[in-house]
Amino acid sequence: MADTTDTTEVPPPDFLGPAVRCALEMLLVASLILFVGLPTTNAFFLGLIIVLAVVAMVTVLFWSLNQQMEAWIARARRTGARSGE
Image (tube, rainbow, N blue to C red; front, side):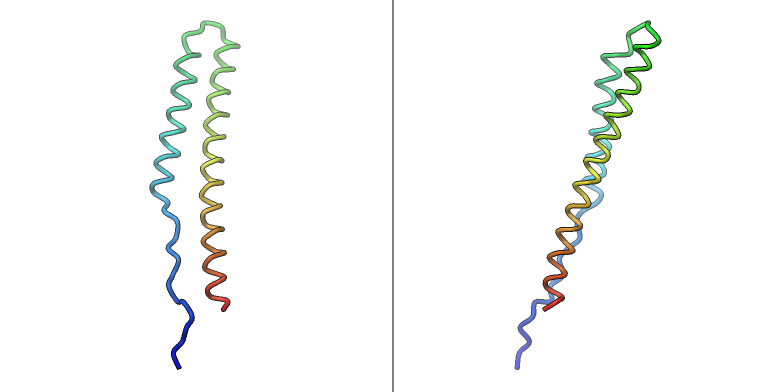
């Protein structure tokens, strides 16, 4: 008889689009923070602004990485359910 299992492959999540978006968001966040904070002459405030820019960029990076991991986990769950039948 005919085999009724679905053998279509679930396509992997795109990487290039989210990577470019993450890079642009990191650049935008750092630019805005540095644009506002760099005109200062106080060394302590300048250091605080630079640290804030780095922390904000790392936060955006890990948020984007989390989104990518969730997409791969969702793909694995869909693929695993189909191949396990």
